Image 1 (cartoon, helix red, strand yellow):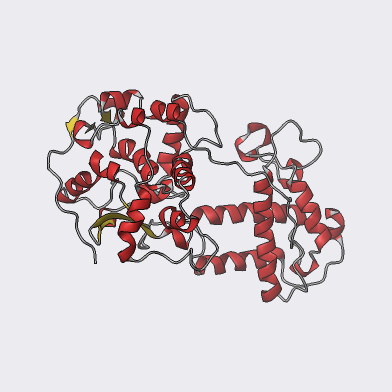
Image 2: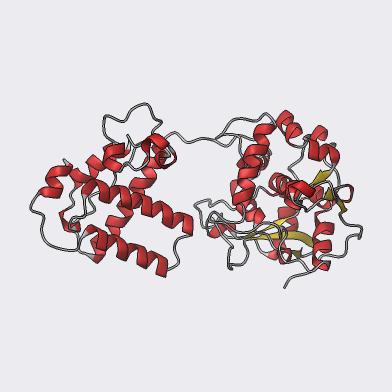
Length: 388
C-alpha cells in the first residue's frame, strides 16, 4: 500500500520531483511538446506524486505502480470542474467514499499510464533504474469511439441553417471550414492554420499544402500530416481559389485571419463553435458525430470505391505502417491523386443548398453590429500562383 512505500526506509537518492523536473526540462528543451501536451504530463505527474509522495525514484516498485493504476480507474472525470470535488487531492478523489461521479474513460487511464511508463523508461537510462516499474500496466482491449460520417439528412441540417439560407456569415471560416473538411478530409487544426501561400499549382493541378512548412503556431499531428492535397473540383466551382486570390490582393496572410492560435492550435475556437452548431442542427451525439465525421465521410467513400489504403493515406495524412505507403507522392503524381480526390461526391440535395462564394456576404463585425453587411468579392479568378 501507499503508506508502506512512503513511510518505509527508502534508499537515499534522487527524489521523484527532481527526476520529473529534469524530464520536463529535457522535453521542453527538445521542443517535443505543445503547451497542451505539457499540461497533460503535469496532471499525470501531479497525480503520481500525490499518490506516492516525493520519495526517491529508486524506491518505486511495481506494486506501487499497480496500486496507482487501480486507483486511477476510480478517478472522477473533470474533477477540477466540479464544485463538490474542488480542492481534493488524488488520494481523496479516488477513495471509496467518492461515489456517484463518472470516472475516467479507459482510454484516458491508459494515456496516463503510457506517460508514466515513458517517464520510468527514461529514468532507467538516466538514473540507472533496474527496470521500468510501470511497463505494460494498461487496460486491455479498450473500446474506442468511431467517428461516423454524417448522413445526407445531417449534412442538409448542417448546410440548411439560417446563415446558409440567408447566405450571410459573420466570418469566412463559418462558410469555408465545413466545406474544406468535406472535400479534403483534413483535420480541423490543419484547416484553421492554412496560409494563402499554401495554395498553388503542381503540374497544372491546384493543390493545398497542408502543414507543409513549420513555423510559429503551426502544428502537425504526425510527420505524414505534411502533404499536398489536390483541390476538389467542387471547391473550385464554389470559389475557393477566387477567394484565395481576393485575399492575396487585399494583402492577407492566412486563409482565416480572424482565427488566432490558442493552446490547442488555431482551431480551438472553431472546435467549440462547431460543437454548439451541430447540436443546434439536431446532431447531438457527442463522440461519434463530430467535425472529424467530415474526414470519415471522405475516407469511407474512397474505401467503398476500392481505393488502396496508401493512396487514401496520402490525402488525409494517415500513417500506413509500410515503407511504400508512407512515401509521399511526387509532383508527377498530382493528376493521379486528383483522380482519387474526385471520387468523393456530395448528394445532389446537399450540393444544391450550398451557394457559391459570390452569393455570400461576411459581416466581419461584432455580434451587436452584425446587421452592417459588406459584400464579399467581385473579382474573377486569376491563375493560381505556382510555388517552386
